[in-house]
Image (cartoon, rainbow, N blue to C red; front, side, top):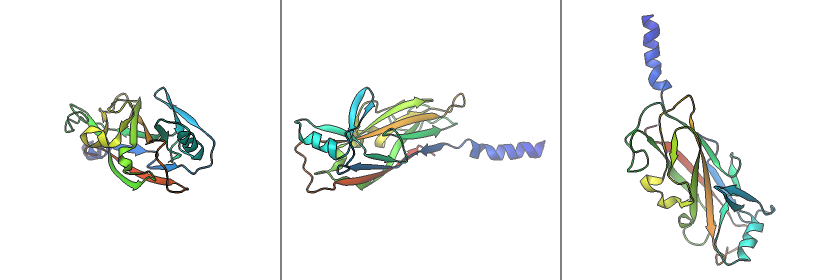
Length: 200
């Protein structure tokens, strides 16, 4: 009995570790892709998927447009789905993300480039929806990723409750204007994003 209890106590820290599992890391924006015009609805709004047809539609208009990735590599529905589990209370986060008894889920690193004039960081937007579990989105509407506070803190995640981990759906949008002209086609780029749950 004593040996079994000791083994259980040794296993607890590992069993109670936080986990982050996302189905995709790479975002492909390919404005030379020959696919047909395609829209997806996010937060009640329709957005075009990035390809040649949607780029030509942009050029025929006068207003900026935001495009979903041509492909979220490994994901589905134009989004990144992340499942988060934490069994312990936080309280060591930023002023918003990870405040109180929660932990902060954030974009920890971004690599790659996009084929747009100027700095793509001023064009990449993010929106996070809580699909289930004990979490609060800090970007419920499209927001520049570079402007998300607390070091790109996307959501606060509370302790695992009722055996239901938190599931977040993350959407990314690239904004272009009709005055943006690519020097040549094909025009494509890939961003790779990594995520962290504070203290994981």
